[in-house]
Image (cartoon, rainbow, N blue to C red):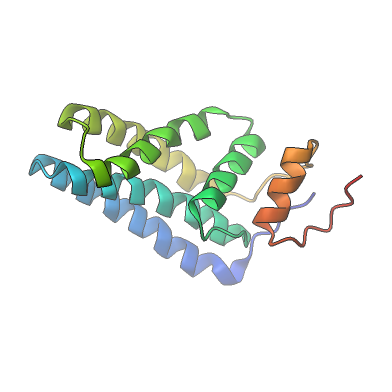
Length: 157
């Protein structure tokens, strides 16, 4: 299936990308000031904003955490890099920590480092023309339907 880059969404996508960069800087600042809960929240937001930027650029649904997971898995599949999804795992842990505040600062710092290492790769992906991707499994076809809002143009057997 030939993906589309929606040029009308470029500025909105760029705004989310910029927010991602701002959030990761804020996360570092909060961690320096020992505000673990806020640092965790900003770490999650940095990852989420970067994933949203890709989704917006491609015209995909992205308005829930489960759809963000779909976006991440789709990008991971397209790139042939399962580590993309794995490296987003710490963001989910940081999201939880923004509520329960149980992680020590050194763990938060490691997780923020993992997210920081992923952000340039997500930005590169956002700026590239999406590769051709053919959903081969039922899970992939269902994910396409969710990302495209139930209108996928796929013939599913």
